[in-house]
Image (cartoon, rainbow, N blue to C red):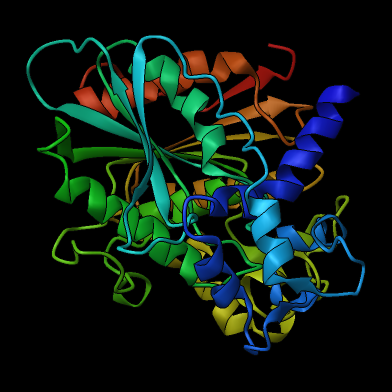
Length: 368
């Protein structure tokens, strides 16, 4: 129970805690949309609103600059423990801004295998495009980086409380271009970049894998606009692929609702913004030059229907793109640890090192 409470508190504090990387005054000016010298709940990023009463110490219904600064100068929450065998370079700006969401963490091996530049595994977190943090990705890639054969990355992006689509994919593509632009500096291979994401992060990595030539989704962020944002391989953990079809397979969430994660993403109820919603769906962009995909999805996922991975996998195969579906029998909105340790490693080895056979579709137990 204590862990659950602590996690909830971390989510609530995240916008203010992450913002401590810039001046409190600058952040206040950014959030104070009407420039009246006080913050109202509607002016705050969505995650920060739930913590409004803690910052509003005089309970007048607004947050003054003094209250804001006092809160930010409280003792910082401890950084996550750094995994052994790796070096983590945190909070690197990839977009040329000081926005804490437009930053990445770089995970480098202490001991490298060989002298050649290492392939990159970039993780993108989930959270319904409105929650989550890049810090969760460090441990996802650390085990692979510890082998000395990969460089790991965890990418942050703007959430829907701050910006709507296509800001999220603009951020992710800017991060990929930054990786290529800084590959030599960090001993990375710019021609071998795999992306791995869960849930909303699965959607974003699928978009990266299927929109390499879609100029409207490139954006103009960062200093490396001459670099490609294409990726080499995609690991999609239970990500949405066809947003307009999600309610065709009912679960615990009404995706067509005005306040659903998908509607908040596109800035309107998805069924009333069909053209934009289709452009925000990986299934729309499938073509023969897409990156190879590995999908992992549970048959009883209550949040993202299993059907989403089925139809995306089928469309990729029809386009002659290498695609493999790992079906987790009776699995929910998660994936067995063994899948990452086995199938994901084999998939990455094949596409980043060129060794091993093509994986085949497989059904695994949710208890593995």
